[in-house]
Image (cartoon, rainbow, N blue to C red; front, side, top):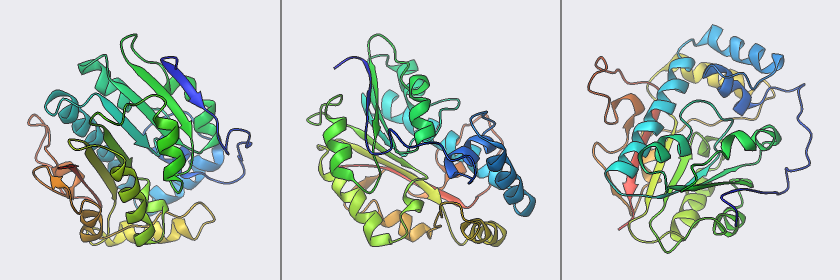
Length: 271
């Protein structure tokens, strides 16, 4: 297996539909990226007109992920990552954060958006010591994800599974939990699970804006309560401070005191 590889899948030959807004491209727009179309900008602007705080949520989510990865590599000694629902490349992608600390780290990205596939080369820029790969698969198909990822990752060694803002696209909570269980069951003791998703009960304006977005024709994204997000970690050992609003998860000491937002996440170790 070469250090940088792409595993084609069912979305490999799909055309990019520029007539309908896409959540990954809208998220890229909110993060300040350029990989989006006018329809995505219009949908993103319509959302921010109702709830400007969505930009803070997007950027806080990325910062949370960066802090998770830094902990996993620098403190937990993790050298393998399976990042499912990676989205479009922006700044501080998983491999960039991890390989800055440990160049030998190996990362597999998973997504099924044809535009992400088109940008796989940007995702696949690895250090010579490490490796990155891209798997074209749907989060609904954990068996395919695991089979393809095993070509790059050694699942006898501890691995960090990242599910960042992807489980909200699985409407049924039991199905989302089953996906998490299937993926974690394949990983050995000492592996980690990182999850963050939009949450209910913090900001009614955010929830109202999300309801309107879900009714717009774009791919729906379902917010969950903090308790529901915490339930994804059942059977695992949560790392302090547990599941919290993402700015409160081990915030940078040089930053101002963070305030809670409608995005919760946590990190846990498999015993």
